[in-house]
Image (cartoon, one colour):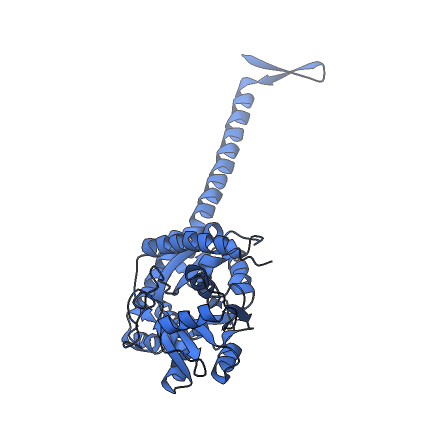
Length: 351
């Protein structure tokens, strides 16, 4: 029996045994190539798993979206030190301040989704999707909340030169002196500006906002009497309260602050529905492998249960709590929606 193969217009005859041998050789080569391809695909599929198994195998970077010396920076460095010890790697705190935290947010959104870069941010994260309509990233889509760190209520303080002793007197004074009460903040759209703008709207006040490049210079002007009021994190202003350089009127949280237990909340003072407790939390690039996210979450929660870390955080006025990742994600989403409504109603936008 012979097989015939037409090529080039001529006829060529090949013995059947030769043809079968050629087929067997081709099959062996095809199987070898297929095996190589399968092995390559398996190696690619296993690569993320191996990377996750080895994580972390090099130093990590914690982005801090604000300048050194502020509350976020201090909390971040405390956390970075402890988390680094738990993970067995150095965690480098990298301050990338500016644009309300969106510079660091952009860096995180563009980083590799491998867990080696993460960010400590506060409630400002919930403001930015509305404040900055032209962001190059979508906060809730491109960045994933990992772990809640804690919260600290703010405190409404006034200069000693202002003739008010409580919230009611402050409101009465502001209403009888429209536009005369200047309040400072760390800038338009900052965590010190938006809640005061909300208070002004809720209570039908006419206050004058004086934005500064950071809360430090504003506090200096508050002490000297150049501005009349500020809403500040307790850690930032507590030393000046204790020294009598500024006068506290009320705290902004749902419950009284442990560090100022004799001071009423804004709601207790008559401003119904005013509940503002800035939180702090850790975020990673969306798409980071879930097992790496889980390890980072667990390391942060472990750090937060350490008595020494808790003591240091409490000194910064931070009420530390350990939450599930799901609870923190729900809080971030809920606050983003809440502040979208507030910021939209106030018609505040950043370029």
